[in-house]
Each structure stands twice: as C-alpha cells, then as structure tokens.
Image: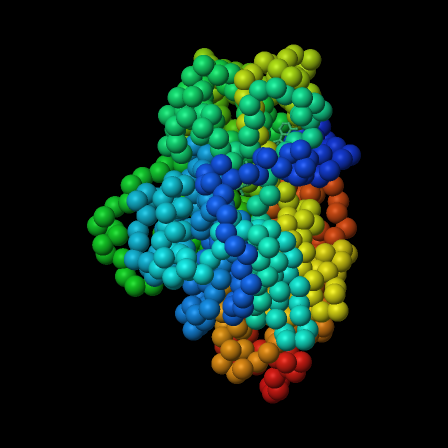
Length: 609
Ligand code: NDP
C-alpha cells in the first residue's frame, strides 16, 4: 500500500503503526538469538529440582511391558486412555514429576489457570463424568483431574514417578525398546509413546552476573512456597517484608504478578516486551447447564471451538470467549474489508488492518485500566496479534496502579546486569531480596536436549543425528528407523490453540495403529521412506497458513526462534491446511483401513484403489 489516502476510511494510521512495529522489532533483535538463554544444568540444575514432593528411593526395575509412555501429562494420559480403550492392559507411564499432570504438576505458581475454556481444555470430561467448577479452571483443579484420570484408567500401579528416562534404544534382535532411566531401570517395551510436552524445560536468561546474586531465586515452574508462603490461590504472606523482582511478562507472569503485587512489600516487574492482555471474564459453572448436557457434548464443543479459532464460521459460538471473539472479530473485519474491495486492498492487507484494529483495542484497554501514564505507555504491545501468545486477565494491568508495584521497562533490551544485591536497568540498580524468573521454557533447541534422553533407533542411529538437518516424520508421529515408536507433538501436525485437543487426536491415531498391530500379532510398525519423504515435502513446501503465529516480521520470541532465521525451522512447521484438515486426513486414513505408508513387519498392506 503506498498512498495515505487509501486509509481515509480508518480512524488510525497504518503507515505509522507499521513503522512503529518495525522499530519495536528491530530494537529487540539480537545476534545471540536463542543462545541468549542459559541451559538449566550444572550450577543451575537446582532450578529444576522438584519442590513439591520429597524424592523417595526405590530399587531399579528390570522387566518388560507392552507400552511405555514417557510423560504423565495430558499427552501421556490421553495416550494411555485411548490405548486402554483399544484393549492394551500392560501400560507403564514413566514421569519425571511425583504424580500425573505434566505442565500442571510443575506450574503451581499463584494464579495458574487454564487459558482455554476448561470445558474444552480438560481432557476426558465425559469419560470421567466430571464438570469443571469454573469456566477457566485453576491449577489445583487441573492437577486433581489429572490424578483422577490416572485412577480412572488404573495407571498408578504400573507407573514410575520421579523417574527421568535417560535413553531408549531399539533392540533389533527381539524387537523391543530398552528404556534406561536415572533410577537404573532397564525396561523393555514393544511400543513407546513419547509425550514429553512442548514447553517442559525451564530456561534462564543469560543476564551478566546472574550467578552473583546473593538473595533468593527460583523459576515460576518450581514455585517456592516455602519462601513466599501462601498457595496457588495467593496469600503469599512470606513476601510481606520482601522486595521482589519478577523477570518476564509472558503468560505466566501475567497470572502471577497480581498475587505477588498483592502481598510483596515491593514488586518490580522487569519487562522486555509487553504481552497483549485481553478480558478474562471467569464465571462459576452453571449447574443447570451442566445437568442438561447431552452425551457427546465435549467433543462437539471442542470441535466448535476449534472451528471458530481456525476461522471456520459456526452457527453458534458455544465457548464465546476472548479466543473466539478475537478470531471472530478479525474474520468479521476481514469480511467487511473484503466487501469494500472498491479500495483495491488485497487479502493480506485486509488481514493486516484487521490485526491492527484488534491490537488497537488491546492497547486502548491498557489506557482504561492503568492510571500511571508512563507505565500505561510501556505496557502497550506494538506487534501483530499472534506474534506472542495472547493473554487474558482482569487483574494484571490494574496491579500496576498499586503503590508497591513498579514496572521497570527495559525498552526491549532486557535486564542489563544482575549484581549481588539486585538488578540493573538503564544504569539504575534495583535492590531486591528475591528474583523470580518468569522467563519461560526452551523452544527450538534440539528435541533430545529438551526431552532429556537419547533415542537410538535401528543400526544405532540417533534421532538427534537423523533430525540434525530438520525433523522427519509422517504426520508428526512416526519416523523411519524408529519402529514401534510414536511422538506426540504439534510439529509436522495440525496446530490447535486448544493443545489437549491436538493430543487427543494423536492419541486416537496411535491407539488405532497399536491396536491393529496387536490384533494381528505384528512385530514391527514403521513408516516407509516414501511416506516420510512425501510428508516432509508437504510440510516444507506449503504456502503459509492463514493465521501464522510468530512470522518473520514479528518481535522476537519463542514463536519465531527469537527473530533469527533458522534453516531447519521449516521442517518443524505445522501442517499448513490447519488442524481440521489434518485431523480429517488422519481420520480418512484410519477409515480406509489400508495403513498407507506404514510397514508391518517390513511389508505394506496391499494398496488396492
Ligand atoms: P514466555 O517465554 O512466554 O515469557 C518469557 C518472558 O521472559 C518474556 O516476557 C521475555 O521477554 C522475558 N525475558 C526473557 N529474557 C529476558 C531478559 N533477559 N530480561 C527481561 N526479560 C526477559 O514464558 P511464560 O512462562 O510466560 O509462558 C510460556 C508459555 O506457556 C506461554 O506462551 C503459553 O503457551 C504457556 N502458558 C500457558 C498458560 C495458560 O494456559 N494459562 C499460562 C502460562 C503459560 P520477551 O518477550 O522480550 O522475550
């Protein structure tokens, strides 16, 4: 778009906004990209210690099970549930934490809450006959639900908690995986499902001097209630006489800052890039609504939500919240824009304008809620929606009106230095008693580094070596050379904002393949080279999805490899047709019964048309 006259119909100036977004992005680009973060190991390994459960000693286990599932979060629980339904009895979940729950086991920070409506986010609600108490559940309820799933599917007896897998190695001789752990276990398994989770390994910022600080520190995913007092519901009485720093203003900080601000003597929130924070609007579950739900309601609701957030209009918006509103509004603007095509705008231009308008609303909300003008200005996000994860909260922004809370905006540069006593920004030192790192989780580092174990397939080939030049799978779930092994991840699959929905679809698919192999006494299940090559081509040669997350023009963050072009990133892309098309594709593949692209004991089934 070249001439300003094109925008006479708008009440904002897209040229100025475009320029501002560019400046904000450029300010934040850094040479070290993803390397700026410190891996949590060696001197920093205490940051991943489990603060919730005492470590118990046990004898090493040496036995054989039919299926090992690595990870007891939603992915592992869903895989186990669907495998049980497919008749598999002998399942063992191996989990680092002390219980089921995954991200909800670790993330117990005050205010932790699901961001997607609980009725579509919590898995297996109908199977367990459970209705969440509120539209957006808080962490303790989600953790309890995870345990309930474990009990319902009888997964506790065979599970190994507080156990980190260190290696899984394919034994060609008797077609088993041998899984080694940090407890000295040697477990043989016919099938393995890897449900490690996408945001599992906390990361620390490589701020100069980070190791020098003499006060207390912890990462939000290992909240230290021993120090702060209180619970996930707040009441952090231990902070009454403490000066606290929180580094980071992502989705986690947005939820915990109000609680820390409520009790700390002084809270400094160190911001590099503000999040966009829209309305939350939580409410208790209406018992009449719950009592009248028809069988199949959860699947229907999940599909309704996923359609709306994928841009497929629906007759009704069952969830009707910030997510569906946000995408719905953008689509409406698109439709309105498109109908005025007398102004000669192309679809990408109309989309950009719709995005500007939504972000204008988000910025206007900051002015409505934050009294201090400097803080309000600094809290406004200047980037496209979906460059960063959208946040929803009603108390985060007003927290900055409190006299004991100060936003320390670093103008995109991050904290300059950490000293023995505090943090330095713009040459000013802020002395604190405690630093809380809300700095997120590793993304974009090697799969096996994040998983924490080596995966060694046929002929001693490591998955990390095979994928050194880019991920290679069929449907994001199976990789040649790694028989009887299934991954659960969004990469090379269809992405949904409702991650458990995606995990459920993967679980159904995996259970289908494993179920068939068992019924037919098949030894190995492995994708063909052709199927893998074809799928990788489909992923890397796709044209961009309609609503991209973290595009190249975005401010840096984990959505776009910290703003640095990454030659192998395109291999980890989502299926460009979106989750609905992807799941339809999987479902048709299962229905036709030909298992195209999969070898059973080295042979594909006959592929008649
Ligand atoms: P994020 O990676 O989203 O945020 C990390 C924060 O740390 C960013 O604000 C980042 O700034 C900041 N940061 C990093 N380095 C520095 C530095 N040197 N100086 C100052 N600031 C720094 O992590 P979160 O834990 O907040 O969230 C991770 C993901 O977990 C979310 O995106 C979401 O997917 C999920 N989540 C979901 C929730 C839910 O469903 N309810 C709740 C919480 C999290 P910058 O942006 O500039 O990089």
